[in-house]
Amino acid sequence: MKRGFRKYFRVLLAAGIGLGISYVPTRLAAQTSPSTPQLVHTGGHYQLLVDGKPYLVLGGQAHNSSASNPKDLIPVWNSLVAMHANTAEVPIYWELIEPEQGRFDFDTIDAVIQGARQHGLHLVVLWFGTWKNGNMGYTPAWLKEDPAKYFRVINEVGQPIDVISPFCKAAEQADETAFAAVMAHIKSVDSTEHTVIMLQVENETGLYGTDRDYSPKATRRYESSVPARLMNYLEAHRDHLMPALDEAWSESHFRTSGTWPEVFGSLAPEAFSAWSVARYVDGVAAAGKGAYPLPMYCNNWLVGPGVVRAGQYPSGGPTIHVLDVWKAAAPHIDLLAPDIYMPEWLETAAAFHRPDNPLFVPETAFAPSFAAYAYADLAEFNGIGFSPFGIDDGVEAGKLTPQGNSLAQVYKVLEPLLPTIEKYQYTGKLFSIVQGIDNQSSLFLTPALAAVANFTPRYFFRPPPATQQPGYLRPRGGGIVIELGPDDYIVAGSGFRLNFWELEGPLRSPQYLSIDAGTFHGTQWIERRRLNGDEQHVDLFRFPGILRVRLAK
Ligand code: DGJ
Image 1 (cartoon, protein in one colour):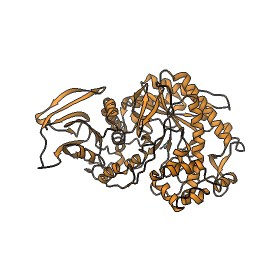
Image 2: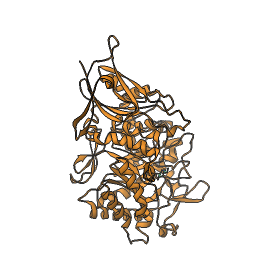
Image 3: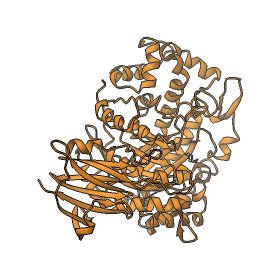
Image 4: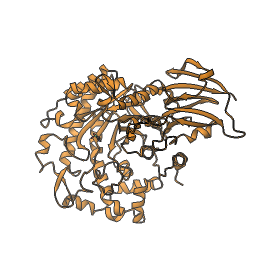
């Protein structure tokens, strides 16, 4: 069994799902001054530091066009505030920032920063540059109109498609110049306040519509030797590669030199695209960090169910298949982040949570059934953040929408708990509960709780509403459990009751010393109400809340 698999083996067994997970040793993040937001890690433990303190993102991402007019950001801010979020993810657009080559207009960035500050929010800024969903929609007109200089990817039947070739140095340099100017501007307006805490470099990169660039220039490279740097990296990490890459490489009996098809067999076009796209994006990130070294990540378009060919999803983006190629190619990218819209939320999160990659979910469905995954993100996977997409839709006519309501309930529970969660991440004392959607009473997570506690928990979940609502409209029960000390637990969340039962010996319930409802100030517990008599239950069935449960020895 591979190193690191064991932990999830246990978790996924309970969830009834199988998954191969592998790990790659760590790489140090770039050094910066202590006050600049940064991602630090010791061994496989990651922390996003803002003003020197750990920071967890309770976020929401704006719709794509919302930042083109500051007025359209108002629903974003209002929704985030109503949601108890602490961070906005907002795009900025190359086409508006550099309307003529070399002339920059930073009004969009200033409006976004100002709006975030006025609403007490931090910002993750999304750079919509060369790539947006495997396409080039946000490149400036001057670039789109000069295809000779800024040449496109050529597909298998010899046609140019709307994707800049990753081999186009002129485009890469233009993107680097623009992104460096953006970062220099952010530094000039924000190096004291630190409203902006992280950058997304490009958006869902890759080649949408073809598995690789078939131009003669690209084909020559494809039929040349795989760069030694990639081969050395893969060799050094051979025991911990993602299964798809490992399997493809095994087709060539782990050849350590040769052309792309010779080494990677059936995965060659995607691996080749990943290397070339990641090298381009790394150049952009390096240029940006040269101006202002904030943490930077890349998001992805995952391989959806039933999708078999690279190009049906953007080929060469940082999907699970080629994550290791990206790690080798893009040292200036601090983390690779999944956009999780699929029902396989937990499996995907588990795959991206590795000793060389903390989990950060910059996009996920803004749907009632997805909100409880925030608990799993921060607790089960020691994640640094969670951020549903299209957060503008959280409030309508001054009222929370169904998806807004579900997320607000979860973030309201998590908001006061963040310092405590930060304290307990990576300690093995932090667990999450997520209700299964199909089997109303099934558990996805937290068998670990049974192993550490003297008592094994039993769960009861609120059944879905009787109406025939589609699954994504049904809120899930969910929460977290923190083992503060022996027989001393925080249980928080909503939609479930939790009973403790002894693990060994005769089956019996524990004696409760106390059950208190309360909250936290920093990491200090503030008790609000002692629950006894009729209320002596660990019951978050109908109302979200935070309970402290002390059991008799
Ligand atoms: C994923 C993209 O990254 C977003 O910008 C947006 O297009 C969403 N898909 C829409 O679902």
